[in-house]
Image 1: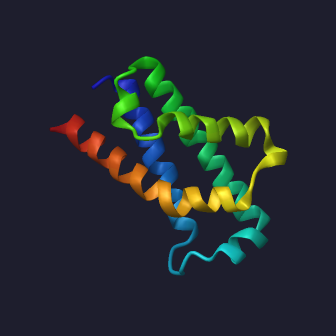
Image 2: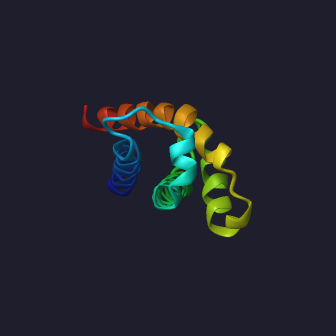
Image 3: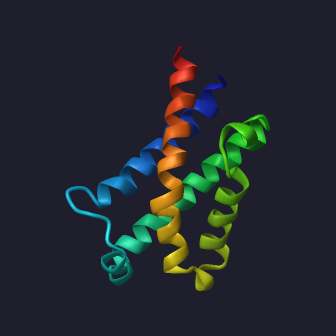
Length: 117
């Protein structure tokens, strides 16, 4: 695997782990998330990085469009957070955190493991 792609995969992994760390030791709670502006901004920043890394990966190797499910949606979310910040829905971000990030984490871990095998 291309070294840059592997680096970007690790960037994604670090961001997902960081987001998970924001909730370590406690159950994920939407109302706490919604009321904590610093947490929301930290999550959004990590989602920006994840989206940019996915964009760079598929730009460098388009075969990753199939290897990273929802890659276009991930990039779209990044663009929304950056360019349409005034239309960000807490509910949408929360859905990404609870439903999509765990799947992305599994995919990225698998890709990293495959690259080392």
